[in-house]
Length: 332
Image 1 (cartoon, helix red, strand yellow):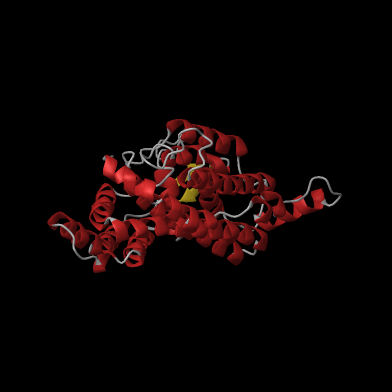
Image 2 (spheres, rainbow, N blue to C red):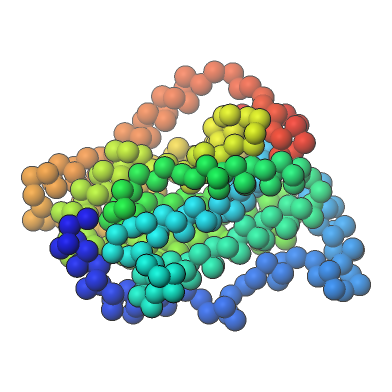
């Protein structure tokens, strides 16, 4: 990245300390996985585990596919922290850097780490899933990595994370809603609590990009258009369990059918961010910047139209076996 762009982030250091770091919560004020799980040190532990399993009995297999897919996505956290630490100007060069950007990335990772921990332990206690196949999938995914397409560029990187945090907020919110419908209030609470974290993290990343639009609108709108042209790849798109080479595609199709995360959500997120960042109101752009502005501001409706056509052409649904639920079949 050019030196003048790196200087922008260096100059934003005090702003980030004042506006972004407060969005991290002190450890002692955070929720922790054990707040939601049976306590193995008490006499009530086995009774509480039985209660978890009784509640989980009423939940359909396709819901568990979505829940497991969400959990595996969260468990690939090392890959996502690597993303932040490869971006120019904001990386943690020493691993203990006192710079605001580095403190944020470490604190964000520490908060996110609880999500996979909680869902993993809860799924284990339900007795409904094949934990060994899930553990293999997590190892495959972390080992495979991810093609983020942000090119070490923090403009692209923070746009990507803004989009993804909102996507995970929506996905966990919808899994919470479904759990409530199925009568599992504890699981609904778990998913809703994780969603609230994602929403707070979304706030941080969208604030960063909004600030970039204020001080460098041309570069930021070009980065947004670039990111959308390449499409926002989902974090777990290289998911694999050693058996199903189209595992992520199949998981995504189940999530689409259950309305956990859909193509419409993708378009809605773009529309939300365009409004949040007031992209349509930008002035003083270069010719290239104005073309990027027009592209971004008209993209969401086009995505919706394409999705409507795809749905209308959709063929009869098929079923696929998921190793995560002991090879049982689920409708895509």
